[in-house]
Image (tube, rainbow, N blue to C red; front, side, top):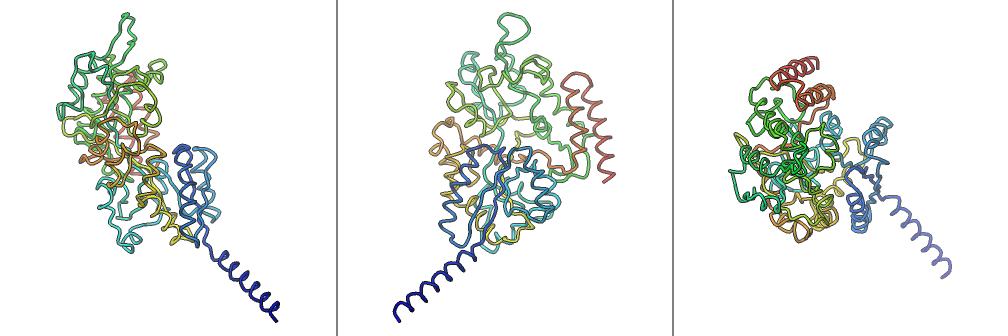
Amino acid sequence: MTKRLCLVLTVLMICLLSASVMAKTVITHYNYPGHATAWTDWLHEMAKVFNAKHPDIEVEIMTASSGGDYAPKFAVMLAAGTPPDVTDFHPALGASYLINGTFADLRPYLERDNIDLQRLTSASVVSILTSNTGAIWGLPADIFPVVTFYNEEYFDRAGLPYPNDLGAAWNWEQAILSARKLTIDGNGDGVPEQWGMDRPWNRWYMWVHQTGAMLYDRVLDPTKSNWNDSRIVKGLQFPLAIMNEGLGPKPSTPNWSQLYMWLGKTAFSLVDGPGAIGAYYKGTDLRYNIAPQVHGPENNATEITMGVFEMVDASPNKDAAWEWLKFISLDVDAQAKFVEMTGRAPSLGVLQRRYQQLCPYLPSNFMAFFEAAATPGSQPNYIIADSAVNAAVNPIINQIWAGAIPVETATAQIHEIVSAIFAAQ
């Protein structure tokens, strides 16, 4: 009788364990490898922690074979009816999915759990994560505000004040004056050994925004061209003046990719963000620091973008996916580990003053990142689903930098072409 009872109990326990295993919800996080290895390593580490805390959920990390394969493979999974539950598209890469509603609205989940994003992160971050219909299409991983990087040693040699000490006087005029003193062509061959400004053409839309203008009627899924606004001409003339005077390389400059500031070839940069520190500056012997973005005629708004985690609307496991999203984006310990492993700037306000503690190699004025992120008017680059727009705009912009077309003519052409594209939609 005792043996029979033990056998019955053993069978019962096996059945219960099997039922428990069968009840476990498995969710897939589809990871973009372009975020870098440290991001992927962190995801795997957090999945172990999360799975241990949630015995009813198992997170599996699926990383695409390459950055170029990420979006096409996602499209195949969607079409096949086997989508992942969670993704980490950055806004530009996921533009069409963001606009067509592929990502679930997280606002109901936030409201259900009494989570107020405005209290956890900055208003600019919440604005970026909010669609034109008011939906919250993702949760933040980090923030990437573009600021001024400058080589203190070069500024000292030139007898120039540091950008961080100038406040609002660090403006376009001062940037050009500084670039003149910082550009050194010692042998007079027309090719500086030291350039003033790094990649003046990069993120050129920032200079337009600093005039108070906008290229389009809105950032997300624009419908109207503003390229006939004369202030856009003024914005484009700032980087063009730097290049035409030989104070910064042009896209056509031979080996311009060997002239980066972190290589010691340029005195200051206005086009980099937190990611450059861990990727390029960490481990160098440069004496550098950062400051808020340069001031234009109207403001010193900058570009701010971010890594984002999204829930796929077609996911059959939304409640489990939401628990994972909350953990990796809003859990303080998980985010602290993210910052420590990746060096990226935290989106959670509670971690921002701990940034240097988590990443001891940061420059002393690291808080300039968060000042820039909170600057009124700071926004991401335009998120446009129709690739025809940028396919039309970018070649004409490149003609401006090459000196092949006047700025006024170029902007008029762009306005005509883009207006026709929008009208046909």
